[in-house]
Image (cartoon, rainbow, N blue to C red; front, side, top):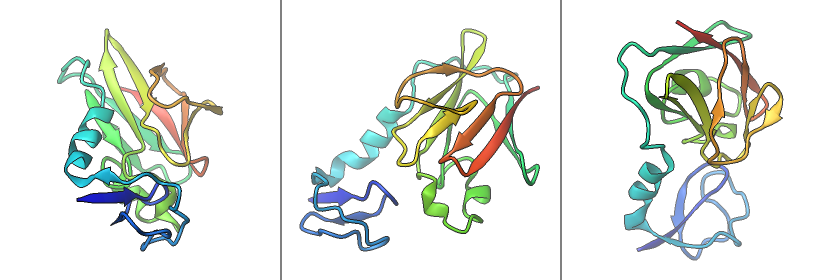
Length: 155
């Protein structure tokens, strides 16, 4: 069965829909995909070349509220993943993609990768190119969709 995935909210729509049934965005230009491949596509977005280190911990502290997301190894951040408790309380939670970015540990360093999010990921004010690795440093500012900022903290 073929479906169209809304690039704005991630809703699965019938292949012949021209508007997303959830957010009403124009999806007439979205190419239908095989529904059976959706789960494997999500898995393929994440970086599988990461180190497992139980001692590696990283924290994203939200600048306004101080709420914290604890991250380890290869966590995906998004509306349906790590941080969902923060994002779902936004006035428009759909501005954060379901699978927004990934933070991972490799070679003794932390990295972030935008997973082709709808509204982008920023590191210290610079827009990240999708699917490219960017090294994180202590006290860096990560912004999701330009509306919610986190301070990177190593522990």
